[in-house]
Length: 346
Image (cartoon, rainbow, N blue to C red; front, side, top):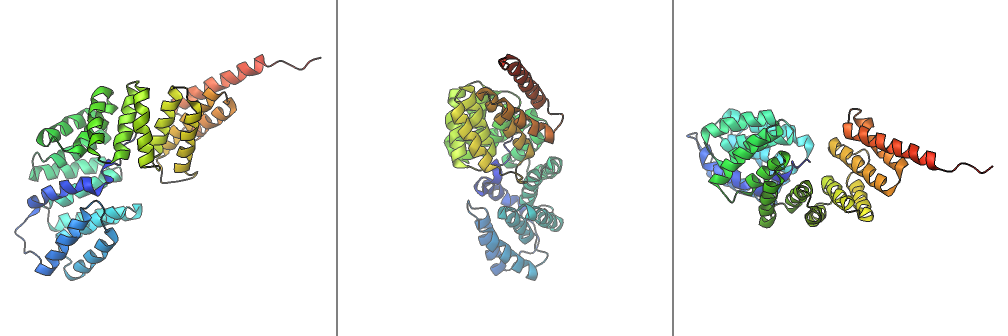
């Protein structure tokens, strides 16, 4: 299961940035009133649920043309590049945030934003380095602890993530990002009961319904509560039809109940959300999609199509053990069916 996009919402990160702003103050000469007013306005917009990143980029570039050493402007420009959402701008976002920290190492907000960016581009070790430095300046801050926990999970230590996000929740029990991250880590270590409890709180909060409901539905599936899983998985797929994993998990739930027609519909929507040849989709999810398609085809008795689906997985990863086992089972069934088939009459 891959639930890595929860913090894309500006509204979630905004609280973390704004809470850390006081820790970023230094004795450096502040910018003039007009520039400061623009920075305040642009920053407020970037930390809103619907930021106008393109306008912010234009304004910040204008400020930097006049004040090229203004660390806060470089920081906000990095955040604006990330908010624009284009993968091509991620490198520029990182460069701007690094420049901001080069000019003002005490800018904790920039370090938090940089750590989030490193997680976006699968550089969890670098994210951990930035968060360790930030915690030296703001010890025990829940937003830093929570993001560090997620970095630890991505580095293969979900138990440490549970611990760190628990510390964040102790400091701020209403901090939904920490509760979500802890739920993901709990699910990863197989503690579906506690994961369900945390996911239920996040779903009730209304924060990012696509990711929260996907997590809850997946936790129910892990716990064997298939009937409970269907409603949140349906909601996840409805809230964000482009989420491939939601359709895959919904198909699994339907297949578990023998509702193969419904599973087929979920697969069709999954295929629609993941066009052939798309590079924007995680290839491990594409493999999950072909695996689920293969299992549905097996249940339907469409063995040749099942073999084709499992073959697609093995074409991408020849060492994929579940696909190897499933394909062997399909081939066995095909041979059995061929033996039972009556020969031509003489």
